[in-house]
Image 1 (cartoon, helix red, strand yellow):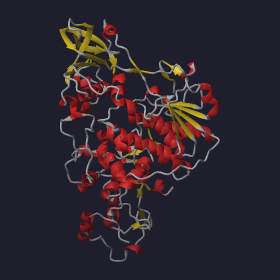
Image 2: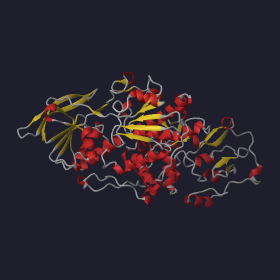
Image 3: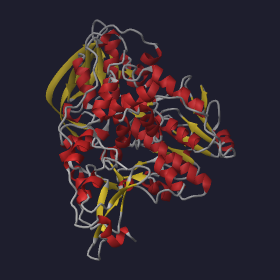
Image 4: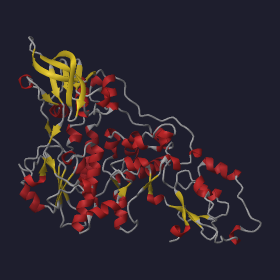
Length: 587
C-alpha cells in the first residue's frame, strides 16, 4: 500500500533507494542489541498554538484539513471545542499566533483570519442534541461568551439547558460591548440561532432577582452557571465630573449598538487606556464626531488596550495623549467641557500616578469615561460574593464556587477576562457540572482533559477519556527544535485585507476575510506540529523496511525487524514520533 505523500515527497521517493542486505529484509530479524525503539506518540502531543489557545482549538489539525480543502471538517473540528469560530475568528486577539512555531522560521500563521475563513467556507447546519439526563436540568445566567460556551457543551453532553438573559436580545458583551465594525450583528444572530437549534432554551428579557428569584433558580435547576459579566461602570474620581455629565464607556457602546445614538457632533474626550476606551473612540468617529482625543494614565507602551486596536484607531484619526491625569473638570464660558490635566511621570502599584510639572487643558463637547467595569450582583446570596466578584476556586481550574457545590461561574464575573478566556472558563465549568452530576471528581477529569501547562482544556479529550479511548491529558508540546525545517521553505504570510480608511461612513466591518484560495495557501504554511499527516517519510527512509502501513493509512513499527536507528524519527517533519527506551515502549 502506497502512503499518501505530497508531490515533493513523491518526487523524493523515486530518487531514494532503500539500503538493503544481501538477503530479504524480512529474513533479518532484530537481535538483542537494540535499546531504543521509535513510537508514534502524536496522540499525546500538542502544538504550541493549541496549548496557548484558551478555547482549546486543535488548530494544527484544523489547518491540515484546510490544506486538503475540507473546510466543513475543519469547522466541525473547531466546534468540538468552542461554539462560535465565526466570532473568535473576528474578535480574538490570537495569543496562539504568539506561540506559533512558524514565527521562528519566517512569520506566524494568520490563525485568526484562517479561523474566520473556516467558519465562512465550512459552515453547515446543526441538529438538535439528544437529551440524556432529563432529570438534571442546568440554568445558565447570562448569554455572554462564558455562558454560551457552558450551555453549548452541556447540551452536547445531554443536559437540558435554559439560558437567562436580562436584555431583549442575547449576546451580552458580544452584542452590547463589541462594536459592529468588529462583530456584525448578523454573525451573532446566526450563532444564537444554532444554539437554539441544538436545544438550548433562550429566555431573554428575564433578570434574575427581578423576574425570577434566586430561590426559584435553586429549586428548579440541578446546577447553575453564572456568566453575567461586569455590567457596571467604574466612576471617575475627579473634581467637577458630576457637574458636566460624563457618559460611561459601557453606556456609550450600548447606545451605539442599539441605535439610541446614531449621530454625534462636536469634539470628544475619552478617558481610559483599555479596549473599551479604544472601542468608544472608533465608534465616536463612525457617529460623526469631530476631533476625538484619548487621555490615559499609562504610557503608550503600557496601555492595556491591544496594540493592533490602538494602531487602527490612530490610522482612523485618534488623537492619543498618554501619561496624563485629570486635575479638574468644569465648564468653559461657552458651555463646553474644559478638562485640566497634569503629566504622569510614572505609575505606582494600583495605577497611582506620580505627577510631573507638565500641564495641559482640553475643551470638548462630550466626555466619555472608560476606566473599568464593576459587577452588578446584589441579587446573589452574600455567601457567593467576594470583593465584587463571584468567589470561585480558580486554583482548581474548575470555576465552581467555594461555598455552593452546584453553582459555577466564569468570565468577567469570576476574574477571567476577554472572549477566549471566557470560553475556556465555560468549558471547565461544563466539565465540572457534568462531573458533579455523575458523581465524579471534577479535578481528576479536568486533569484528564488538559492540554499543555497553560490551563487549556479539550472537550474532545474529555469525551475520549470518558469513553476510555485515552488515558489522560496532553502534556508534551512540540517546540520548533523538534520540527524538521528541511521540509519547510520560507514563505510570506497571507494577511487578511483591511478596508480603506473610509471608516467614518458607518459601522461596516473593518477587517475583510480571506478568499478561499488564499486561506488554503496560508494553511499550507502550517507545520501541522505534533501530528501525523501520513506523509510517508518514516516508510521511505527506514533502512530495514520496519515501518508498515496500516489499513487506515497510518503507520506502525514492525518491532521484530526495527534496529532502533532512529532514521524515521529524524525524518519525521512534525515530531509525530519519538525514540524511547525499548522497555518503556514494549511495557
